[in-house]
Amino acid sequence: MLNSARGLNGCVSAPHTAAALAGQKVLAKGGTAIEAMVAAAATIAVVYPHMNGIGGDGFWIIHRPGETPVGISGCGRAAGLATPEWYAARGHTEAIPARGAHAALTVPGTIAGWQAALGLVDPARRLPLEDLLQTAIGYAEDGMVVTGNQADCTAAKLAGLQDVPGFAETFLLDGRPPRAGEILRQPALGKTLRTLVAEGLDAAYRGSIAKAHAGFLEAAGSPLRLDDFYRYEAETVAPLSATISAGRLFNMVPPTQGVSSLMILALFDRLGVTRAEGFDHVHGLIEATKQAFILRNAELGDPDFMTRPAADWLLEEAIAELHRRIDTKSALPWPHVAKAGDTIWMGAADKDGTVVSFIQSVFWEFGSGLTCPQTGVFFQNRGAGFSLTPGPNQVGPRRRPFHTLNPALAELTDGRVMAYGTMGGEGQPQTQAAVFTRYAMFGENLQTAVTAPRWLLGKTWGDATTTLKLEDRFDPGLVAELRAAGHETEIIPAFSDLAGHAGAVVRHPSGVLEGASDPRADGAALAF
Image: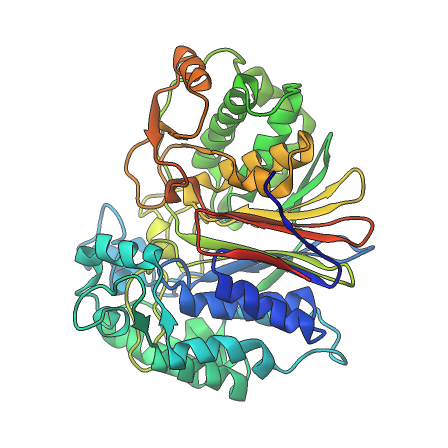
């Protein structure tokens, strides 16, 4: 049996060990799970830059004993100048470009999310911000060891990034992609983190960092201006929720696809599957995914411009109607237009019972690639997901783009609280469903549920095909059953990045804290 990490004083799961250690260090000092997560988020922004950064967005679900879970949306809004007409005048009439200054059109929201989350911590016991950012500063200034994941990603995406202003001087070594095991230093980013300590997190929006970024972005050709930063704040929201036989599920509101993750599990729960890992389990989740994604692709976007609220998709009659469309024996013909994404998920729990599910992203690997030499910050390209044509996801001033990001959390019927999630764009709801059902519905060990072979319907991180991808550790008999049912399958290597980098943290009613991390990533689950 694979063993998960267990302890009483704190637990952190992250896809890079340095981030997990940073969170554990804060918990050991008496910090809360929220503070531990800020430390982990800052650290992973430095040591896993191909996956995330402080120039991106972030989302939280925070569960405290006896309280309703709270969501924090650090979703950046589009620039005031960002309109279809602005893009048309610059030669973009079909789509917003994915790299460069025109792709950097939304305010980075993750630091505002950190700020809002820390506002929930009792000021009398809050640790100094320097304690939370200390580890990240060290890695930025002294250097960090490049992982194989980063080295491979940088080499694979170099053609589209090397000529984007600021990228090469920040993330290449002697003009080439760094190799695994080499040391990468980011002194400008270290200085920026020190400025956040000195001026406060608000410096990213209404201080010296915001001014530096606004000047750089305008000169580079981005539509973002200083006023866009001044006007930005993260939002505290009530998460969407759904109740199934295993417990009550929570996820993030639009423009994230959190509603899709909830719909998949609500639909699967109605199928009455009793055994994990067989055809009914895998086929059932895949077919539930298709129904959720069809609706998501048609209607999801900025909630201010959706035709109906996402909460309506979770109503009993809505789920019942979609359930009737699922054939338990045959596959619905596929593909469809998929959503891309590049992300990290992390979870934390403290001895007082707070459990945090957190996700941070720059959309594609290295985002827009546009990197400010003065601050070392590269800007997300989440706005490239906007449409230039009318609809709920059309670009417009201060609009919020569709987000694949969705941190998941559940209150199980026996009193356990489970935070779980993954990177992987299109694969996020699918991997969440695999991990949750294995652990919470079928009783698998937590680490086993994360490590077990996974599947992916459609495109995701760095991929172009829309087949049903199955890691090659699946039982060949199951693969044959899926093919016979009409699934167009493709076998991918074991422990593939395409299957996401998942993790989970669970608080048991006894006070025991448990964590699992994904062997597909470079991380750890630490408990003490």
